[in-house]
Length: 347
Image (cartoon, one colour):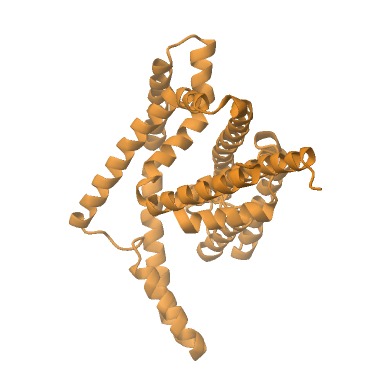
């Protein structure tokens, strides 16, 4: 079989695999998140098992214990404030919707219907209404089951990840073993580097914005900073949306510690987000992320939006590393085709 036919066969195989994964995407979430978890913490497991000579199973168990302890402590510190801010935000939005409905009649006729429907949809959303206890039980059971699957899968991937890769490489014909091993190393470097960098970026941005917004005295500063951190997953659009939301909150509430007028508060919030963005672009991102993916910004944006549309949250998380993996595979395939053409030029 010529190299071109091999490439076509491989491409068709990848397409079939993608269609299969898309068809079962509803049950993939805990497994994919477990794989992401394993990519992020695998270097730490390797350090404990290789440098400190701890058994790999014990290393993974120790990491689980430490992470659980951090989650419990963070939950104890943050949950109360998060719940209070969420309840306050629900009440505030309800009041704002009712007040806006009173003022809606002063708008032109063509705008009244659209805005009225939008307000009704907000008021009827799950954010503002309590869920029936009976309908909540199946959701709770599903989430608990997914979490258990995530824990076991993450443990397995961390413990057996290297063995799985070695067994896969062992099945490759000797002629292609070196190339496949190089490809796997490059893909692992991109996937692991991007996911670890993205997690650290979310934490740093959330902390910086929480400190700044708390000093300013903006309401819902914790929720806004967490939202802004996760918005970094979506390039360009995410940070802009987060900044606009924070500016709207201070414009509507007018709350701050310095007696600023609402429009002045908007300017200060805009300046905070602008400075954090500059700090991120020129210092944080180059140090943490470097040039990991080697993808243009427009490709990253398209990948994230497409991944989110097709696979939801999992698609948002994995879109960029998968796009970078496709780039690596395409570069490798094209290099093979070009080398083959040079060795066997057409007459």
